[in-house]
Length: 168
Image 1 (cartoon, rainbow, N blue to C red):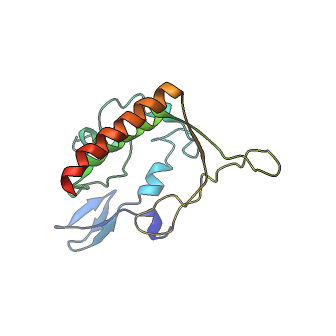
Image 2 (tube, rainbow, N blue to C red; image 1 turned 60 degrees about the horizontal axis):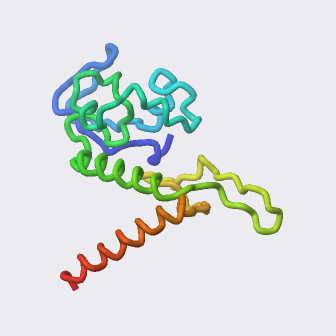
């Protein structure tokens, strides 16, 4: 385990016990987020991309995070404990909206090798090694779903540019 597997540190404010072990006041605790997400009790086949695993979690992450059921959460990407990510509400709603709009507008696929004509598979394990992990750069094919979708996007872009002129 290295720093890429961990959330932000927490400090114990009073002596505490976990499974009979003393955690003294002042101890620094790192939440092992990556390890938690590999727990097959949380996710069956954690290495497999399967959005259906979240169908049993219809609420937003912040609603699970503040509840008393720490085992019933859908993920721990925003941390745990009293000092959750303060932007959890904005991040969760913004990412849902962005993902929904992108999926409405575009088809996404793995790139095609121009020489062989074969699909170049994505490396699903290509992540940075840092405290705040992110995927490494990758190539992808993106195309509008239809001419109708493209016209809607062009209209939205035109309206956004017009609106933003007031801030120039």
